[in-house]
Structure formats: structure tokens, C-alpha cells
Image (tube, rainbow, N blue to C red; front, side, top):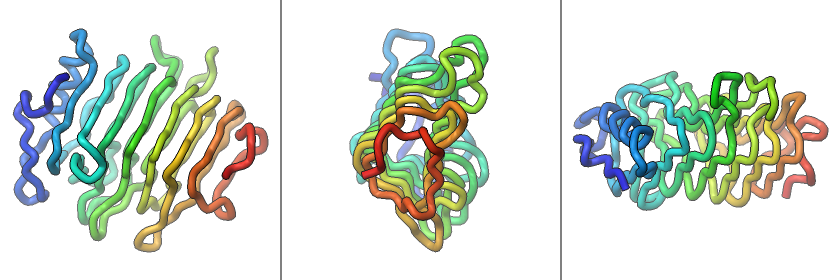
Length: 232
């Protein structure tokens, strides 16, 4: 695997100590895109990101050593964190943490659009927490975004979430838009500091999705036909 430390990153949190691990992650992403090894290993530790990382494409895997051990901390406000396009990427065994005083932005934004190779899907998000420190929030922790994929195959497809827990959202705890056959097994969406646990699943192309997770159904928005069975 590609080790993030090999590109100069140091797990040296808290925020006041830095350094910015974004350049190292960008280099690791570039190496994964260019080479045969598509897995980036993020060892245990608290890793500070002072600026948004580059988008991820081409089926890259980012793997930590567990939710309690590998913590990727966003130390800026309003920008997105992990933006994932194309097909077959994976994020596993880590926590994304909104640092104290940071707000807005999306934790994991998976996108399908009409660009060449823009058909998005077949991603996995597994054993993940997306949460925050005191005074930190996310606008949307996870957004599965098929809004701009208007040619076949439409929308974003076949994204699987397993044991995914999201906290401290101020817009939607999770949003799925124009999603097809996406599934969420285990975990849930939880309030914190007066924020929301509501989710939204919709769009004219949303169909055959499945949710088996802890959410607040009363305050969530689920379009008719978006799910193939009731939420449990």
C-alpha cells in the first residue's frame, strides 16, 4: 500500500501544531492514479488538513486503522473534504473530524456527472465516523450526488455504506440525490450541539435504494419510490 507518511505527512495534531497533511495526501492520490497500487494507507494518529484535498478518481482506496485510531481532521471551514468521482473508490476504517470552530462543507461527496468517465458509483464507505470537536460542524457529512448525471447510466449507482455513523450536521445528516440501488447497513445519523439527524433521499431518478440504519424518519425527506422497502 501507499503509506501517507512516505509523502511527508506527520500525525501531529492538535490543529495548533499542524503540519498541513493535504500536500502529502495530494501526492499520494497522484501516485495511486498513476501507478498500479490504488490503496492509500493512513496509519493511526490525528492528521491535520489545513486546505481541501484534491478530488479522488480512478477507484482509489483510503484505508485507516480504525475509527478510534485514524482521525483525519478538517481544520478549515466551508470547503469540501473528500470529493470522489468516477467508479469503485473506498473509504474505510477512519474518522473524519471537523475541528473546533470549523463549519460548513461536505465530509464525503461522491459525484456522478456527464464528463468523460463521469458515471459514478460502485463505491464503498465502511466503518466510518464523521463527527466534530467542540464548536465544529459539517453542513452535510455524506452526499451521494447524481444530480448532474443526466445521460445513461443516470444518477449515481450502487454505493454501499456499512457501519457508517454521522454526527453534527447543520443541513442534512446525509443526502442522496438521484441515487439508484444505494444501500446503508448499520450505524446511523445522530444529533449533537443542536444539529440535525435528518436525511434526504430524492430526485426524479432515485429508485431501489435501501436503508437499515438509525435515523429520524419523522424529520427526514424520502421521495416516493426512492426506496425499495421501508426504512428499518
